Length: 375
Image (cartoon, rainbow, N blue to C red; front, side, top):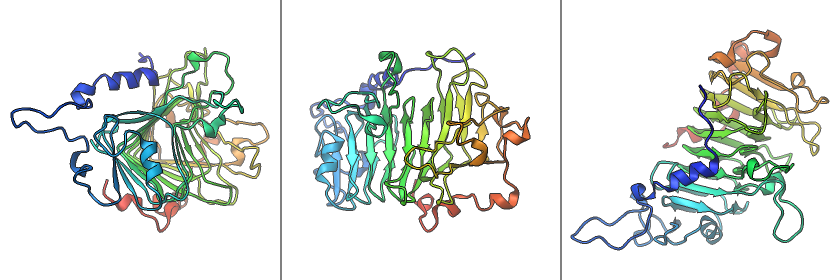
Protein backbone atom coordinates (compact mmCIF):
# COMPACT_ATOMS: atom_id res chain seq x y z
CA UNK A 1 0.00 0.00 0.00
CA UNK A 2 1.42 3.36 -1.02
CA UNK A 3 1.25 6.32 1.33
CA UNK A 4 -0.16 9.44 -0.37
CA UNK A 5 2.40 12.17 -0.89
CA UNK A 6 2.30 15.13 1.45
CA UNK A 7 2.71 18.30 -0.57
CA UNK A 8 5.68 20.49 0.12
CA UNK A 9 3.39 23.24 1.37
CA UNK A 10 1.54 20.82 3.63
CA UNK A 11 4.80 19.40 4.93
CA UNK A 12 6.23 22.80 5.74
CA UNK A 13 3.07 23.88 7.52
CA UNK A 14 3.24 20.68 9.55
CA UNK A 15 6.87 21.44 10.40
CA UNK A 16 6.06 25.02 11.34
CA UNK A 17 3.27 23.75 13.59
CA UNK A 18 5.91 22.11 15.75
CA UNK A 19 7.41 25.52 16.50
CA UNK A 20 6.53 25.48 20.18
CA UNK A 21 8.22 22.13 20.67
CA UNK A 22 11.26 23.37 18.79
CA UNK A 23 11.44 26.62 20.70
CA UNK A 24 10.97 28.73 17.57
CA UNK A 25 8.84 31.48 19.04
CA UNK A 26 10.66 34.42 20.54
CA UNK A 27 9.57 35.15 24.07
CA UNK A 28 10.46 37.18 27.14
CA UNK A 29 13.26 36.28 29.51
CA UNK A 30 12.32 33.38 31.73
CA UNK A 31 11.69 34.04 35.43
CA UNK A 32 13.12 32.22 38.38
CA UNK A 33 16.59 31.80 36.97
CA UNK A 34 15.47 29.49 34.17
CA UNK A 35 17.79 29.20 31.23
CA UNK A 36 17.18 31.60 28.35
CA UNK A 37 16.54 30.12 24.91
CA UNK A 38 19.63 29.62 22.78
CA UNK A 39 18.47 29.88 19.17
CA UNK A 40 22.02 29.47 17.86
CA UNK A 41 22.96 26.46 19.96
CA UNK A 42 26.66 26.10 20.58
CA UNK A 43 27.55 28.62 17.87
CA UNK A 44 27.43 31.72 20.05
CA UNK A 45 25.20 34.76 19.49
CA UNK A 46 25.49 38.42 18.45
CA UNK A 47 26.61 39.12 22.03
CA UNK A 48 29.11 36.27 22.02
CA UNK A 49 30.26 36.14 18.42
CA UNK A 50 32.10 32.99 17.43
CA UNK A 51 34.41 34.85 15.04
CA UNK A 52 34.41 38.38 13.59
CA UNK A 53 33.10 36.87 10.35
CA UNK A 54 30.17 35.02 11.91
CA UNK A 55 26.67 36.40 11.39
CA UNK A 56 23.49 35.21 13.09
CA UNK A 57 20.11 34.90 11.38
CA UNK A 58 16.83 34.40 13.23
CA UNK A 59 13.34 35.10 11.85
CA UNK A 60 12.23 36.10 15.35
CA UNK A 61 14.72 38.94 15.75
CA UNK A 62 17.30 37.42 18.07
CA UNK A 63 20.14 37.57 15.55
CA UNK A 64 21.93 40.12 13.41
CA UNK A 65 19.35 39.65 10.65
CA UNK A 66 15.88 38.21 10.24
CA UNK A 67 16.42 37.05 6.63
CA UNK A 68 19.12 34.95 5.02
CA UNK A 69 19.46 37.28 2.03
CA UNK A 70 20.07 40.28 4.29
CA UNK A 71 22.93 38.41 5.94
CA UNK A 72 24.36 37.32 2.57
CA UNK A 73 24.25 40.92 1.32
CA UNK A 74 26.11 42.13 4.40
CA UNK A 75 28.75 39.38 4.15
CA UNK A 76 30.90 40.95 1.46
CA UNK A 77 34.04 39.14 0.40
CA UNK A 78 35.30 35.72 1.43
CA UNK A 79 35.09 33.40 4.41
CA UNK A 80 31.86 34.37 6.16
CA UNK A 81 29.81 31.98 8.30
CA UNK A 82 26.05 32.30 8.67
CA UNK A 83 24.41 30.55 11.62
CA UNK A 84 20.70 30.03 11.05
CA UNK A 85 18.33 29.66 13.98
CA UNK A 86 15.37 27.26 13.69
CA UNK A 87 12.52 28.69 11.68
CA UNK A 88 11.02 28.97 8.21
CA UNK A 89 12.66 31.57 5.98
CA UNK A 90 10.21 32.31 3.15
CA UNK A 91 12.42 34.15 0.69
CA UNK A 92 14.66 33.75 -2.31
CA UNK A 93 18.40 33.87 -1.67
CA UNK A 94 21.26 34.54 -4.09
CA UNK A 95 24.97 34.18 -3.32
CA UNK A 96 27.08 36.09 -5.86
CA UNK A 97 30.34 34.69 -7.24
CA UNK A 98 32.49 37.11 -5.21
CA UNK A 99 31.21 35.80 -1.86
CA UNK A 100 33.54 32.81 -1.80
CA UNK A 101 34.18 30.19 0.90
CA UNK A 102 30.94 30.87 2.74
CA UNK A 103 29.51 28.43 5.28
CA UNK A 104 25.88 28.18 6.35
CA UNK A 105 25.03 26.21 9.48
CA UNK A 106 21.64 25.11 10.75
CA UNK A 107 22.11 25.76 14.44
CA UNK A 108 20.04 22.84 15.74
CA UNK A 109 21.88 20.17 13.68
CA UNK A 110 18.48 18.97 12.43
CA UNK A 111 17.70 20.07 8.85
CA UNK A 112 13.97 19.84 9.53
CA UNK A 113 14.26 22.82 11.85
CA UNK A 114 15.78 25.32 9.39
CA UNK A 115 13.82 25.71 6.15
CA UNK A 116 14.55 28.14 3.31
CA UNK A 117 11.55 28.05 0.97
CA UNK A 118 9.79 29.96 -1.79
CA UNK A 119 7.32 29.13 -4.56
CA UNK A 120 8.47 30.50 -7.91
CA UNK A 121 8.22 28.27 -10.99
CA UNK A 122 9.63 28.63 -14.48
CA UNK A 123 6.26 29.91 -15.65
CA UNK A 124 5.73 32.39 -12.81
CA UNK A 125 5.39 35.95 -14.20
CA UNK A 126 8.02 38.39 -12.98
CA UNK A 127 6.62 41.32 -10.98
CA UNK A 128 8.08 43.85 -13.43
CA UNK A 129 6.20 42.34 -16.37
CA UNK A 130 9.37 41.37 -18.23
CA UNK A 131 8.34 37.75 -18.74
CA UNK A 132 8.57 34.63 -16.62
CA UNK A 133 11.37 33.43 -14.35
CA UNK A 134 12.43 30.39 -16.38
CA UNK A 135 13.96 27.32 -14.78
CA UNK A 136 17.10 28.98 -13.37
CA UNK A 137 15.20 32.01 -12.16
CA UNK A 138 12.74 29.84 -10.25
CA UNK A 139 15.38 28.74 -7.74
CA UNK A 140 14.68 29.45 -4.09
CA UNK A 141 18.44 29.51 -3.40
CA UNK A 142 21.10 30.24 -6.03
CA UNK A 143 24.80 29.80 -5.25
CA UNK A 144 27.31 31.11 -7.81
CA UNK A 145 30.33 31.32 -5.50
CA UNK A 146 33.13 28.78 -5.14
CA UNK A 147 33.82 27.15 -1.78
CA UNK A 148 30.24 27.19 -0.47
CA UNK A 149 29.29 24.76 2.32
CA UNK A 150 25.90 24.16 3.93
CA UNK A 151 25.07 21.89 6.86
CA UNK A 152 21.76 20.81 8.43
CA UNK A 153 19.46 23.00 6.30
CA UNK A 154 16.32 22.27 4.25
CA UNK A 155 16.09 23.99 0.86
CA UNK A 156 12.60 23.84 -0.64
CA UNK A 157 10.40 25.03 -3.45
CA UNK A 158 6.73 24.48 -2.58
CA UNK A 159 5.20 25.55 -5.90
CA UNK A 160 2.49 23.04 -6.79
CA UNK A 161 1.11 22.01 -10.18
CA UNK A 162 -2.31 21.52 -8.64
CA UNK A 163 -2.50 25.23 -7.85
CA UNK A 164 -1.75 26.21 -11.46
CA UNK A 165 -3.52 23.86 -13.87
CA UNK A 166 -2.57 24.35 -17.49
CA UNK A 167 0.83 25.91 -16.79
CA UNK A 168 3.64 24.72 -19.05
CA UNK A 169 6.55 26.12 -17.03
CA UNK A 170 6.32 23.69 -14.12
CA UNK A 171 10.01 23.50 -13.27
CA UNK A 172 10.49 24.77 -9.71
CA UNK A 173 14.06 24.62 -8.37
CA UNK A 174 14.93 24.48 -4.67
CA UNK A 175 18.68 25.02 -5.13
CA UNK A 176 20.81 25.94 -8.11
CA UNK A 177 24.50 25.44 -7.26
CA UNK A 178 27.12 26.58 -9.78
CA UNK A 179 30.36 26.98 -7.88
CA UNK A 180 33.42 24.73 -7.61
CA UNK A 181 34.06 23.11 -4.22
CA UNK A 182 30.39 23.30 -3.24
CA UNK A 183 29.34 20.95 -0.44
CA UNK A 184 26.06 20.09 1.27
CA UNK A 185 26.16 17.91 4.38
CA UNK A 186 23.01 16.54 6.04
CA UNK A 187 20.75 18.81 3.98
CA UNK A 188 17.32 18.25 2.46
CA UNK A 189 16.08 19.38 -0.94
CA UNK A 190 12.29 19.40 -1.36
CA UNK A 191 10.37 20.04 -4.56
CA UNK A 192 8.70 18.33 -7.47
CA UNK A 193 10.18 19.05 -10.91
CA UNK A 194 13.86 20.08 -11.11
CA UNK A 195 14.40 20.14 -7.34
CA UNK A 196 18.23 20.12 -7.24
CA UNK A 197 20.12 21.86 -10.04
CA UNK A 198 23.78 20.81 -9.68
CA UNK A 199 25.30 22.93 -12.42
CA UNK A 200 28.25 25.16 -13.38
CA UNK A 201 28.65 28.86 -14.14
CA UNK A 202 29.51 28.21 -17.79
CA UNK A 203 30.36 25.41 -20.22
CA UNK A 204 34.11 25.62 -19.62
CA UNK A 205 33.77 25.54 -15.82
CA UNK A 206 33.97 21.98 -14.46
CA UNK A 207 32.54 22.66 -11.00
CA UNK A 208 32.99 19.96 -8.36
CA UNK A 209 30.16 19.43 -5.88
CA UNK A 210 29.67 17.04 -2.99
CA UNK A 211 26.43 15.96 -1.31
CA UNK A 212 26.75 13.77 1.79
CA UNK A 213 23.94 12.25 3.87
CA UNK A 214 21.38 14.37 2.04
CA UNK A 215 17.72 13.78 1.21
CA UNK A 216 16.29 14.80 -2.19
CA UNK A 217 12.75 14.33 -3.42
CA UNK A 218 10.79 15.13 -6.53
CA UNK A 219 9.31 13.72 -9.72
CA UNK A 220 10.61 15.01 -13.08
CA UNK A 221 14.40 15.28 -13.58
CA UNK A 222 14.72 16.29 -9.96
CA UNK A 223 18.52 15.98 -9.82
CA UNK A 224 19.95 17.60 -12.93
CA UNK A 225 22.72 19.76 -14.42
CA UNK A 226 26.28 19.62 -15.72
CA UNK A 227 28.39 19.70 -12.54
CA UNK A 228 30.86 17.03 -11.52
CA UNK A 229 28.82 15.96 -8.51
CA UNK A 230 29.26 13.17 -5.97
CA UNK A 231 26.20 12.01 -4.01
CA UNK A 232 27.39 9.87 -1.13
CA UNK A 233 25.05 8.14 1.33
CA UNK A 234 22.11 10.14 -0.02
CA UNK A 235 18.43 9.22 -0.12
CA UNK A 236 16.39 10.02 -3.25
CA UNK A 237 12.60 9.82 -2.94
CA UNK A 238 10.19 9.80 -5.88
CA UNK A 239 6.71 11.25 -5.38
CA UNK A 240 3.17 10.36 -6.37
CA UNK A 241 1.68 12.41 -9.23
CA UNK A 242 -2.05 13.06 -9.21
CA UNK A 243 -1.97 14.67 -12.67
CA UNK A 244 -0.93 11.47 -14.49
CA UNK A 245 -2.80 8.21 -14.81
CA UNK A 246 0.09 5.97 -15.82
CA UNK A 247 3.84 5.44 -15.93
CA UNK A 248 6.32 6.90 -16.19
CA UNK A 249 5.80 9.57 -13.57
CA UNK A 250 9.31 10.94 -14.01
CA UNK A 251 13.06 10.54 -13.77
CA UNK A 252 15.43 10.80 -10.83
CA UNK A 253 18.54 12.07 -12.65
CA UNK A 254 19.00 14.18 -15.77
CA UNK A 255 22.72 15.02 -16.10
CA UNK A 256 23.92 17.37 -18.84
CA UNK A 257 27.68 16.82 -18.52
CA UNK A 258 29.83 18.74 -21.00
CA UNK A 259 31.41 16.46 -23.60
CA UNK A 260 34.89 17.61 -22.60
CA UNK A 261 34.30 16.82 -18.91
CA UNK A 262 35.54 13.31 -18.01
CA UNK A 263 33.37 13.15 -14.89
CA UNK A 264 29.67 13.82 -14.38
CA UNK A 265 27.36 12.53 -11.63
CA UNK A 266 28.46 9.79 -9.24
CA UNK A 267 25.92 8.23 -6.88
CA UNK A 268 27.52 5.96 -4.32
CA UNK A 269 26.13 4.04 -1.33
CA UNK A 270 22.74 5.71 -1.68
CA UNK A 271 19.16 4.56 -1.90
CA UNK A 272 16.17 5.38 -4.09
CA UNK A 273 12.71 4.88 -2.62
CA UNK A 274 9.27 5.78 -3.90
CA UNK A 275 5.80 6.85 -2.86
CA UNK A 276 4.56 5.86 -6.35
CA UNK A 277 3.50 2.42 -7.61
CA UNK A 278 6.19 -0.08 -8.50
CA UNK A 279 8.01 0.61 -11.74
CA UNK A 280 6.56 4.09 -12.27
CA UNK A 281 9.92 5.87 -12.35
CA UNK A 282 12.98 5.77 -14.60
CA UNK A 283 16.36 6.10 -12.99
CA UNK A 284 17.62 8.68 -15.49
CA UNK A 285 17.46 10.30 -18.87
CA UNK A 286 20.16 12.38 -20.58
CA UNK A 287 19.71 16.13 -20.92
CA UNK A 288 21.44 17.57 -23.98
CA UNK A 289 20.40 21.22 -23.80
CA UNK A 290 20.05 23.47 -26.84
CA UNK A 291 22.84 25.62 -25.38
CA UNK A 292 25.30 22.70 -25.60
CA UNK A 293 24.41 20.12 -28.22
CA UNK A 294 27.86 18.52 -27.75
CA UNK A 295 27.05 17.48 -24.17
CA UNK A 296 27.52 13.82 -23.27
CA UNK A 297 25.59 13.27 -20.05
CA UNK A 298 27.38 11.07 -17.53
CA UNK A 299 25.88 9.18 -14.60
CA UNK A 300 27.40 6.36 -12.55
CA UNK A 301 25.25 4.70 -9.89
CA UNK A 302 27.14 2.24 -7.74
CA UNK A 303 26.52 0.20 -4.60
CA UNK A 304 23.13 1.87 -4.24
CA UNK A 305 19.80 0.31 -3.27
CA UNK A 306 17.17 0.88 -5.97
CA UNK A 307 13.68 0.30 -4.67
CA UNK A 308 10.72 -1.14 -6.54
CA UNK A 309 9.65 2.28 -7.76
CA UNK A 310 12.39 2.12 -10.41
CA UNK A 311 11.55 0.37 -13.70
CA UNK A 312 14.10 -2.44 -13.63
CA UNK A 313 13.42 -3.59 -17.19
CA UNK A 314 13.99 -0.16 -18.79
CA UNK A 315 15.49 2.21 -16.20
CA UNK A 316 16.70 4.76 -18.77
CA UNK A 317 14.84 6.79 -21.38
CA UNK A 318 15.56 9.46 -23.98
CA UNK A 319 14.74 13.10 -23.47
CA UNK A 320 15.09 13.71 -27.21
CA UNK A 321 15.26 11.16 -30.02
CA UNK A 322 18.38 12.87 -31.40
CA UNK A 323 20.33 12.01 -28.25
CA UNK A 324 19.56 8.42 -27.23
CA UNK A 325 20.63 7.38 -23.77
CA UNK A 326 22.71 4.52 -25.21
CA UNK A 327 25.09 7.13 -26.73
CA UNK A 328 25.70 8.74 -23.36
CA UNK A 329 27.83 7.73 -20.38
CA UNK A 330 25.40 5.83 -18.14
CA UNK A 331 26.81 3.01 -16.03
CA UNK A 332 26.00 0.98 -12.91
CA UNK A 333 28.01 -1.14 -10.51
CA UNK A 334 26.91 -3.56 -7.80
CA UNK A 335 23.53 -1.98 -7.13
CA UNK A 336 20.94 -3.87 -5.09
CA UNK A 337 17.19 -3.98 -4.66
CA UNK A 338 14.27 -4.79 -6.96
CA UNK A 339 14.89 -1.73 -9.11
CA UNK A 340 18.44 -2.93 -9.82
CA UNK A 341 17.50 -6.36 -11.18
CA UNK A 342 19.22 -6.99 -14.52
CA UNK A 343 16.52 -8.63 -16.63
CA UNK A 344 17.49 -7.04 -19.97
CA UNK A 345 21.31 -6.70 -19.90
CA UNK A 346 21.50 -4.22 -22.79
CA UNK A 347 19.32 -1.86 -20.78
CA UNK A 348 21.61 -1.96 -17.72
CA UNK A 349 25.22 -1.13 -18.77
CA UNK A 350 27.56 -2.27 -15.99
CA UNK A 351 31.09 -1.28 -15.04
CA UNK A 352 33.72 -3.94 -14.66
CA UNK A 353 35.63 -4.08 -11.41
CA UNK A 354 38.62 -2.44 -13.10
CA UNK A 355 36.46 0.32 -14.55
CA UNK A 356 34.78 0.94 -11.21
CA UNK A 357 38.15 1.91 -9.70
CA UNK A 358 37.98 5.15 -11.72
CA UNK A 359 34.51 6.02 -10.39
CA UNK A 360 35.15 7.02 -6.80
CA UNK A 361 34.73 10.23 -4.86
CA UNK A 362 38.52 10.63 -4.80
CA UNK A 363 38.76 10.38 -8.59
CA UNK A 364 35.88 12.78 -9.17
CA UNK A 365 36.89 15.43 -6.62
CA UNK A 366 40.67 15.34 -6.99
CA UNK A 367 42.62 17.45 -4.50
CA UNK A 368 39.43 18.70 -2.83
CA UNK A 369 38.44 16.45 0.09
CA UNK A 370 35.20 17.63 1.69
CA UNK A 371 34.49 14.09 2.92
CA UNK A 372 37.53 14.26 5.21
CA UNK A 373 36.11 17.14 7.21
CA UNK A 374 33.94 17.09 10.31
CA UNK A 375 30.37 16.07 9.49
